[in-house]
Length: 117
Image 1 (spheres, helix red, strand yellow):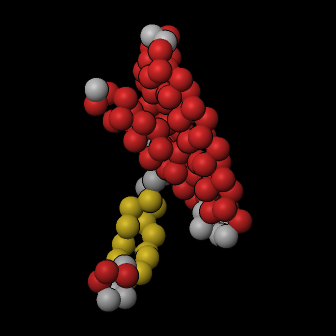
Image 2 (image 1 turned 180 degrees about the vertical axis):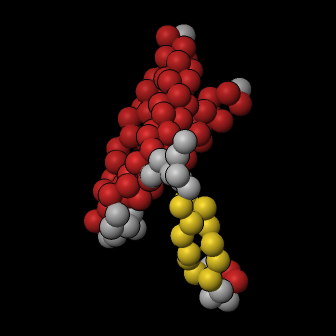
């Protein structure tokens, strides 16, 4: 059975009070792995939706292809800027989770857009 550790952190919303929070016994890398798994699951759905739209052909297919490449270039640039300016943090596991979260928001927005029609 995994061991549960308690850590204390200052709660900014509670005027600096110290509170106990439960920390995952599996560690930050396990959580990052679960985030990556969820991202992969959502991304495969978006890939299927995009493939279907492109396979239908026509002006919608061309527009989707152009949008896909533009979004990928923009997302790559934004994440590089975030990494260079320190917005991802200094801890490797934390930076990994923030990067995955960044891409996950982009994938989720695409899924919503592709299923809205």
